[in-house]
Image (tube, rainbow, N blue to C red; front, side):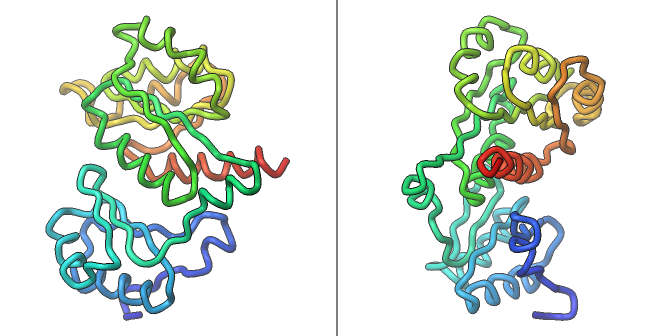
Length: 227
């Protein structure tokens, strides 16, 4: 490709999850190189944390091969195989619930949705069900327990993670968000609360790491399906 871009095309075969491009701080030349090689291989690639200006360059160069989702800051380039038909034919449909404490978390929720979709996992999102109005979460619990696992997104004090894990029968993937006032420290408090939770069954990814949560969910579901 180039001296400063060495894409890992075999990662999906080794790990079950393809390499996904973290676009932040990459220049247009580097991103164009990746897209051009992706198209030439008749493959597809997901980019996360891509800005509007970065995406516009790719859209202008490859208008028929690039799909930019502005709210989530994600972009898909190339030709992707739709896994939904395969799942339907096999009788196995992978589904994940995404639960977010506040409407302010919606951009991060959107990133998780787009990443899950790229990885072939269906999702349903439930937003603004934080513990300040606990009835919103308890009313939702029977519906959530129809899913094998849940991705939870919360900033502020991160109380959602512990409460949800105490109500939900499956594993909870906690995504601390950087939403919150000063003492929340850009998600540090929510992260520490998730790590220190007394409720068992919580896995924690980094602050605002929507892709990390989606990739972990994908791997967990594969364990369930194949076991």
